[in-house]
Amino acid sequence: MYKIALLPGDGIGPEIVPQAVRVLKAVGQRFDREFQCETALIGGAAYDATGHPLPEETLRLCQASDAIILGAVGGPKWDNLEPHLRPERGALLPLRKQLGLYANLRPATVNFALADASPLKYDLVAGLDILIIRELTGGLYFGEKRREDLPGGGQKAVETLEYSTEEVERVVRLAFTMAQKRGKKLTSVDKANVLESSRLWREVVEELAKEYPDVELNHMLVDNCAMQLVRHPKQFDVMVTENMFGDILTDLASQLTGSIGMLPSASIGGQVALYEPIHGSAPDIAGKNIANPIATILSVAMMLRISFQLEEEAAAIERAVDSVLQQGYRTGDIMQPGKIRLGTVEMTDAIIRELGEQAQ
Ligand code: NAD
Ligand code: IPM
Ligand code: MN
Image (tube, rainbow, N blue to C red; front, side, top):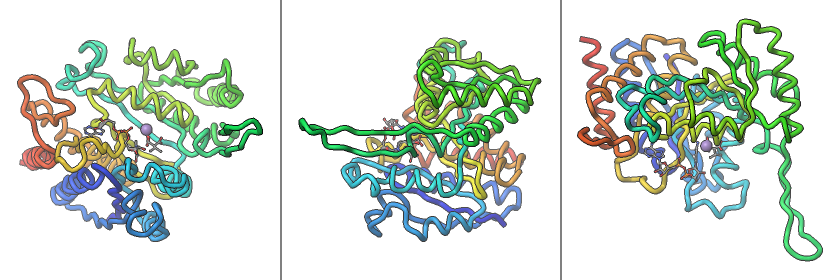
């Protein structure tokens, strides 16, 4: 029996998480596995109900679970709260930090059926399979922040970008290990021509590289990397980078796959791992049954593989998603001429149907 904490959150979160759970239950039935899910409040929904975006009870449930599935947090309703009460700064970041989730794995793979849905040319993206590893508990997100009033009027805002040797080492080591299991190529992305933290980052990477002679390493400056991801994304295999560069580059990479609604993620490094789509709460489409549930469904597959070593179950979900896309089913964000448009629930129905057919 596996104990899973569900944190739907805000916006489209409460639409997509229940759909991902339906897929999980279908897999459980087919493979005779029991998943016990418990839901807790997080983000704006938690603030509205309890006055805090990360209630103690939610944190405790996460710590007592075998894995966590999160939808998304935030939205215009909570944008003007004090920073420590905002869903992003008051809930998501502390949750990642408290659980010790220092590495965020964001795979961008392109299904051949969807290669035409990407804004890039078919040949540039068809068959793409890259893994971006984003450092998740350091950098600008967690460094000291403050405001000062200036004597002449106006203010100064200070943000601190900090990394220690150890923080860099653990995530980069993980990246080398993952590269060893994949295409044996690692690109470390930094801004070592300007930032001191990036100079340290590069030194640590160079030192560790000696332990992984079978992995081909290259360093790339982040501005060039953004350009290279669009120019020739297939040059990459595994990439590793600091927190904010990773945040930005993965939203960019999501478009290679056709939509941000396709990209799952796994946040690992602590006792319990957290699985979430890389997209946000998408307030502009919330409540309309049009959000793409696939990023969250594929996050469930990552959970089965990484937290529970249920490889066959994970692969079954991925195959079902592929197959449904091949059959021409699409949500609005990946819609193409001549294809069949489905809502959030109906796309999930199709994936569950496909899972059932695989079993025949
Ligand atoms: P967003 O990712 O929510 O949305 C960006 C665009 O992508 C929107 O047009 C949206 O409709 C679309 N989109 C996103 N997910 C989709 C899906 N599954 N299917 C179809 N279309 C989808 O980013 P944003 O608009 O910059 O942020 C909205 C809120 O979400 C903000 O409050 C932000 O802080 C928060 N956010 C939370 C997380 C998280 O909880 N992990 C991640 C990113 C943003
Ligand atoms: C993400 C999000 C978060 C981040 C925000 C909501 C704090 O954009 O998970 O990618 O920047 O990490
Ligand atoms: Mn982001």
